[in-house]
Image 1 (tube, rainbow, N blue to C red):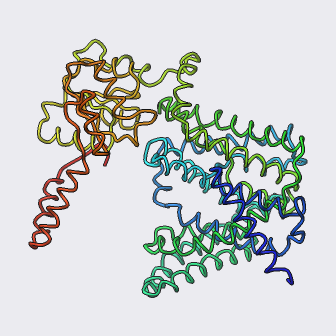
Image 2 (image 1 turned 30 degrees about the vertical axis):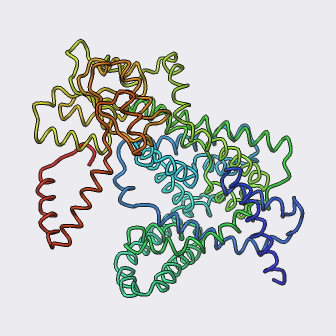
Image 3 (image 1 turned 90 degrees about the vertical axis):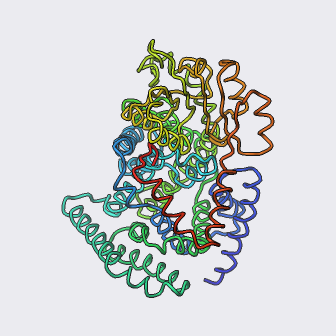
Length: 569
């Protein structure tokens, strides 16, 4: 213990320096921590050679990491996962584990069937941290691709819970031992559920006025469940994860997450730095095995995710981009392999190879997700050559020889959904004259059920616009902001529309006031700026509040919403 403070100082300083460099290079922080650990560890500059102290502290970081992940898992969303997500997640998890186990039993660094299973499970998990961060930055979490990706990630978290439950008993998987482990899991879940359902709400309600006690109470709950799991001979990591899941719907969760984050970051940094210390010196053999692991992982995603989504008629875009989003290894994969190494089931070589593969995939998948629209455009011709028709080709051309529609709505999001509801309420006679162009297959099906003609396709593609009838429409409306239009913007789309349809009246969206003159000059008949309308409405709210008329304004709003049913609710 004599060098505890010094060793921690070296770890944190090294992690900070490398993290700053990684931010300049726009690389994931986890890679920086692993690199820092390798640099100061026994295979680097040998500044730290006794890993026992760091290992003990990093175990605390692991518990806090899984506790935080549990807090961010929404039980309601898990239980209400749609058919598409459920089927795809089941195929992806089971298919990837089976495919990986078969491959790694014959080719790879695994020395035993059990080690091959660990690698297969690790390769089946995708990085929630990396994916959510990138999709959030791209504003794609609420898109269909984002929801499918996030749903599969949640199901993967459930699979991790199940694996952590049986992990301590994998060496001797006899029926009696597995039955006992199952009983312990049921007992752990029962105690966690009953306590979080009937005891914790009252406790947290009592201490809610004292934020520091909310934090201490949450941490006490986390480590109590971790300790109880250890007492039941289960993984402490599993106990911490379940502890987070069980209170994820509490109203205090956001406050707990905010307060635990800084504490968690300190210990998690030590965990990944400690993991980096175990990475062996890279050799040609190590790099080759890491590349092989990457190839197997990416292949497993394309064999399990794409076919299921394609078969369930989600369209080429959703099928391909969801597959690309999931094509990397989870940070929890490194945790699982580290647990296996501690139990003696996984060699240090395998942990090192997985760390290299994690780094390669984290960098590669980051660029792939950021450029997924470019990737989609490049892949579309190849998918057609491989006889993979998109939904528009399966359903025939947009018009099918019928009269062109008078009103063309490009893209279907919140504003378009509200516009359609307004048309249905006030001018239902216009519905037969409306056509919507969008590549969301869920919206596509909902519109068809409501009697609205919908065309599947990318609104930035010239041939899609032409075949959908935009070249003959009298009124064309685009309500999507530039941030949603991938690989294009409203000005470029307007110029394309004006070439296709010189006489049509085009209504286009603008986010910046400075864009309005350019849009009018390019041929827009009217430019909508929703934030100006919202600002005017807020001013009326302020005036109503000053005159004690907010209740009347609120009742007027409720009258307006009564009976209103939108496609995107």
